[in-house]
Figure 1 (tube, rainbow, N blue to C red):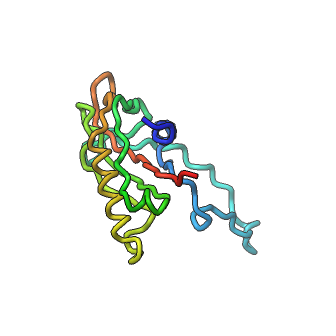
Figure 2 (figure 1 turned 90 degrees about the horizontal axis):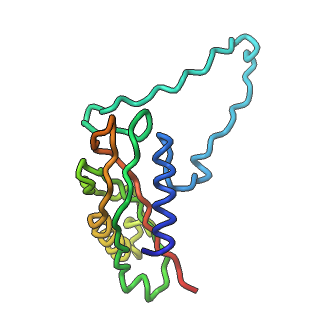
Length: 169
């Protein structure tokens, strides 16, 4: 397993410990800004912040969420994707954010692409992007995990994994 895949998965595992985080770095448009104080800011009372509300375990879909007594699944087997020849030849970097559910047997299910670079909507890169997405899905299907647990029993958990391919200089 390449160092990059190990690093991405280590980041994934770390992000699973805090609900609502993702592996992707925030884009400038997604960064939070502090609103300017309004004219009647003095009139507002400072309400206490809402305490952390844990997500229900399990949720309505029967899936658990890491934290609040649910341990993260642990990767025990992975394979690198077969990067498309046209990407390797053109030295084009790419990545896919893959969402999946790790079932109670440690097998990934419900695998789908959340986003990818290059973007399939780019007409010039459409074929390359679709090939990359397919290869990333195939690689994720081969992952095997030690399942997440809740109260000592295996529990299905949703994960997001970023699979990256970098230029080689």
